[in-house]
Length: 81
Image: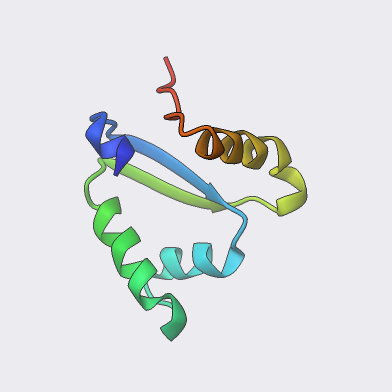
């Protein structure tokens, strides 16, 4: 929703949850993911391009740490130039 508010039209989302990424790719998933999956698919239609890919947790350390630091400090994530 933050990307939409910034009028970003192209987005690439990476997740360390392989089950969620597969469900998004297939546009269907497990019953436990139904609500989250519906929200994600609805939001993805707001972009001209939306790509979701899997990143293993052991390769995602720096990005995860940065995101958690921003959330803990109540800072907004800056928009890339």
